[in-house]
Every structure is written in C-alpha cells, then in structure tokens.
Length: 224
Image 1 (cartoon, rainbow, N blue to C red):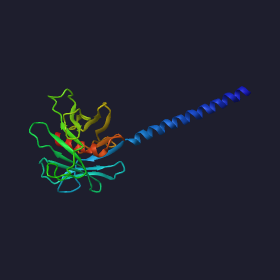
Image 2 (tube, one colour):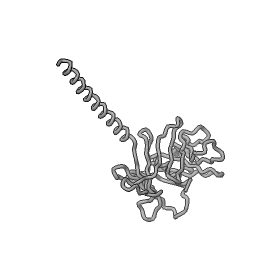
Image 3 (cartoon, rainbow, N blue to C red):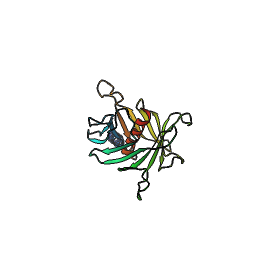
Image 4 (cartoon, rainbow, N blue to C red):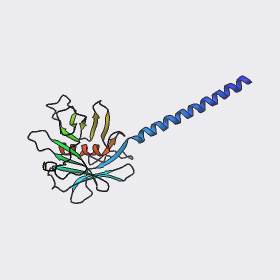
C-alpha cells in the first residue's frame, strides 16, 4: 500500500511538472512572437494630392507616413519618412552621379539640402544604399547593398535579397542573419490576397523599424 501511494504521488508530481513545462514553452513562444514587430504597409498616401506610403502598427495605429508632392510617374530626388504625427524620422537623397547604379544617402531627421557645402555644420549621412547590378555581383539574389556613412567602397553592412516586385524580400546583416522581411499580406479569413499595394514588414527587435521602412521606400524607387 505504501509503494502504491508513493508511485501515485510521483505520477501526479510528474504530470504537474510536465504541465508547468508546457506552459513555460508556450510562454517562451508567445514572448518570441511578441518581440518581432509586424507592420502593415499600404502603398498609398493619406493625402489626396500625393503619392506615398502609410504604415500601421499591429494595433491599427499610424506609425509612419510618406507624402510625395511630385507628379504621377515622376521620380523624386528626395524622400522624407515621417512618424504618425508628421515629424521627420529619416531623409533620403538620390545621389547625383553618372552611371547606371541607382544609389541613395540616408540622413537622420530632416535635411533641407545635403549638397549645400557652404553649411558649416552639414549633417553627415548615416547610410548609403546602392542598387545591385546582378551582372557585376556574385550574389544574383541581391537587390541592394547598404553601407555605413557616405562611402560605398567598404564592405556592406546589410544586403537586401529576394524580389520586391513580388513583395518577398529579406534584409540580412553581415553574418547572414535575417533582421527584417517583406511579405505578402493574406486575409485571415478565406485566404484572399490584398495584392501588391498592401503587404507586411516584419522587423526583428534589434533592428530599427524606421530604417527598415526607409529601405522599402528605396526599393520602391529602384524596382517600380
């Protein structure tokens, strides 16, 4: 009788430990999922007279916006990424260089004219993004390379691979770790596709979502 009760007690404890372990695994899984930020990107400006982007958070809040006043079909030489309240987050300038390679400089905040050398305290770019020419690159999946600062002669710090046309891209760091992804957005019910105008931007916690959105803006300039 003593052995029976000991065995039964061990069984109950074992079951409770297993249940607690399953709860811990579930909590860890939920925490990992919460760490990634998923944004919904709408390729449309909220302003009627503009072209641009509108970005929503998972709670439906307005996170970023881009409003271009250039005419339809014209390629702007300057892009400003704003937060939901309209404050500039990043400014992007197309580099005025001869050649086939489309490249951009990214600045923090708002920059009026990056080419004005008379300014004593001109801001310096934080990143340079250059379109990949597959005929010159070993990586045929590469869409663009990201370099720190203004120089593009050093080794890149990020590479964007995939197909922006199909809204299927990954941003990888130097160690080939995915830090951000662009994915097609599917409806929860019925599996209806939103098309190419609405898609998801998934950002890892250690990567800046504003910078990830800036890369989308430049990919849109380079591949549409």
